[in-house]
Structure formats: structure tokens, C-alpha cells
Length: 106
Image (cartoon, rainbow, N blue to C red; front, side, top):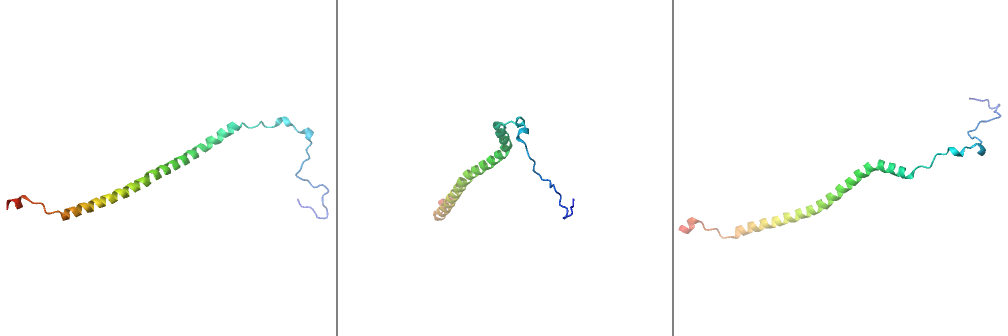
């Protein structure tokens, strides 16, 4: 809608409307929402995500509780095994040769 700048319309429509409070129907308001029902609906929507997150945290916790002590035990046992092997080899090298039956006969 183009208008000639010399002929500005006398009435310019606006997006506002004058409301007469006497004409308002206050009885048609929506009832207040049931808060408990809304809480339950939100809870039901969030439950799967919450359960997945809880499972992930549980697995992480169990892994940390098992892995760290297991690594400590493993390192300790490997160290003990190395010491026992070294001691056994040293003991074998320092023992006198075991007399065989042939040595006893001569």
C-alpha cells in the first residue's frame, strides 16, 4: 500500500485496542494447574535420563573402588614375586651341588 507523501491519511491504524473493563468476562479464566500433577509429569519425563546418569556414576564409582586397590595389590604382588624369584635363584647358585648316587658309590 503506497501513499503519496502529499496525501497522508487522516487515520493511521494501530495494533492497540481499547478494552472496556466492563466487557471482560472474568469467569472464563483457566483453572489453576494441579501442581502435584505437573511435578509428577516432569518427574516421569526426567526419570530415564536420571537413571542413565545414576548408572554411569555408579559404574564409575565401582570401577574406581575396584581398580585402584587392584592396581596396588598387583604392584605389591609383582614386587614380592620378583624378590622371591631373585632369592630362589641366589639360593640355588650358592648351594653345594647335590650329591648323586654315582658320587656316593665312588
